[in-house]
Length: 478
Image (cartoon, rainbow, N blue to C red; front, side, top):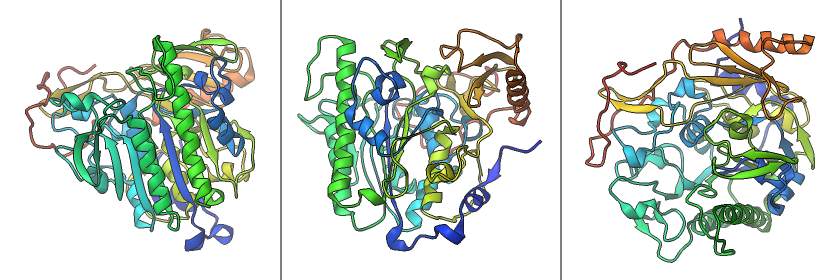
C-alpha cells in the first residue's frame, strides 16, 4: 500500500513545474499567514455565519479562493506545531496541549529535532517576521527560540509564564517580548493593537524585499474582554466584539499591504487554529453550532480557510479540495520556488495547483484531525502523551471516519446528508459511494505508526516554576 509519507525534497520537486513557473528574485511573492485563535466557521459571515458580519474577512475571501474542506487540529499546541513542521501530531509528538511557559518541565519546541520550514524560507532570501502568540517555548529560558526557528523579527505575547502574574495579560496591559527588548508590560495598550502595529511597521519597512509574515493573533481566545471599539456586558457580546476586532485588524493588514504597493504580489493566507470556545453558541447556515474547540467534530477542526493572491488567483472561487494545516508551509515553499531538501518525513503537500487553477483536487487522499486536551503528563523521561495511539478522524470530500485509540473504526458519517454528524452509517452502507469511501478510509489505518511519537526535545534546565513529575514513564499510558 502506498505510504502517506514522502521526503520533503520529493514533495517540493514533484509539485513545481520548473519549465513554466521559475521566479526571478524580484518576482518572488510575499507570504502573509494570519491565524486567528479559537474561531469556527459559525463566526465568519462569508462561510455562512448568521449572527455576525465580518466584512474585511469576506472581502479577502472575495478577492481569492475559499476552501470548504480545511482541517486544523482541535487545540492550540497540536495545530501550531503541525503548521511549523508540516507533520501530523502522531509524527511530531505534540499530540496534546502543553502550555510551555506555564508548565515547563524542560519541554519546548526544539527546532534542532523538528523540520524548520520557516528557516528554509528565511534561508532562501526572505525577511521573516512573527507577531502574536507562540506558547511552545519559554522566552525566559530560550530568548533566541524564535530566531532559531527562522524569524528575523518578532513581537510576542510571552504566554502565561509560571510565577509571573503580569504575563497572563494578552489584551489590556499586555506582557510582551520582542526583538528590541526583554519582556515587559505595555501599560494602557491593547495587545492586539500592538501586534498588528508591529506587523504593519514590518511591511512598510521591508516592502522592497520578499517577506514571510506569520501573524498568529491572540484574538479571539478567552478571557472574553471589551475592545477599544465596543463595550458589552455578556460573554457572548464580548466574543462578538472580539471577532469584529479581529476582522478589523485583518482589514488593516490588507490595507497596509495595498498602500505599500505590493498587494498583487502578496499571498495572504487566512485561517483559524481550531473551533470556537465551547461556551459560545452561534449559527451556521441556519443551524445552531456549539463551539467545538477540543473536539474532532467538524465544529472543532473544519475551519474557515482563505487564500488571496490578486495577480495569480482568480477572484471569488470556492474550492472543495482537501487541505489541512500541514499543507501551508509546503505550499508556501512551492509558491516561492524553493527547492530545499530535508531528511524529515512530511505529511503536508503543496496545493499550488489548486490555487492556480491547474487542478480541482489536492494531492491529499484524506485530511486528518487529532489531539488536543490536556492528556499529557510530565514523567521522569519528559512530557508524555496519555494514549499510545490517540483517537483521530479522517475524511474525504463527503464522508468522515472516526478511529478510536485501539485503531478501530467506531463511527462513519455522511457529511453531505448529516452535517451535524448525528447518524452513524457504519453498519448501514446503502450506496456504492459510501461503501467505497468506508473501505478506502479504513484502509488508511494500517499506514499509521502503531505508536504515536512523544514530543522530541533536549530538556531545558530545571526551573522553579516547572510542574512536578507526576508519573513514571510509560506506566500511566493507555
